Length: 225
Image 1 (cartoon, rainbow, N blue to C red):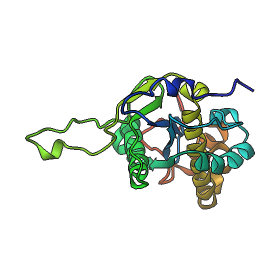
Image 2 (image 1 turned 180 degrees about the vertical axis):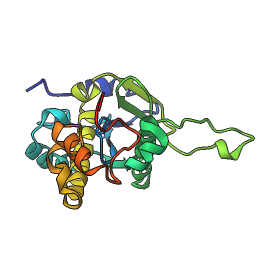
Image 3 (image 1 turned 45 degrees about the horizontal axis):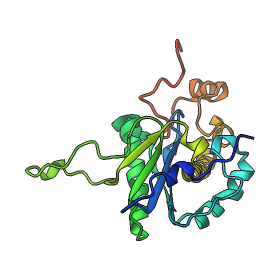
């Protein structure tokens, strides 16, 4: 297993006015069906301890993710997962849908009475902050969302404990949703493939056509299909 993520990078943000940092990660971005999900795990930079066994969710077995998810929630100062549906992905595009899912999780955090001072986001692109900046003269431009400074870091889910913790929460919640949807449409094997583009999943789409949970704006059958 890879080296355990730490809070070393997160603690570099500790300073005047910065205490609560929100680690953010997404799952389901590349799937053909189901939601895209964004997890947030907030840490207290002044006194947070490490949490054993947490890794990027892709490196953990399902049973380990299930075991760790409640531990992550207890460890975090606040945590949440937001989702955007396949229809929202088709309507807004994947970046817009990520922002919607992340904003839903963000407002869950605020409702818990915690306002993060900064955000650490996995990847190289800030898809969390509002797309349009509020205008003094145009109320319609004032789109609510994450107003904290967002810092991106490639492979943060591998090295930063807050982001790895967020990835575990998002993965477990999304997997549960796909398990439930499997009961509605068992032919697609979502209990196993979780909506990703396996050959069996694509064969089922060819045979049965897409469901309301498929991202119909995507190339569901792959290149040349």
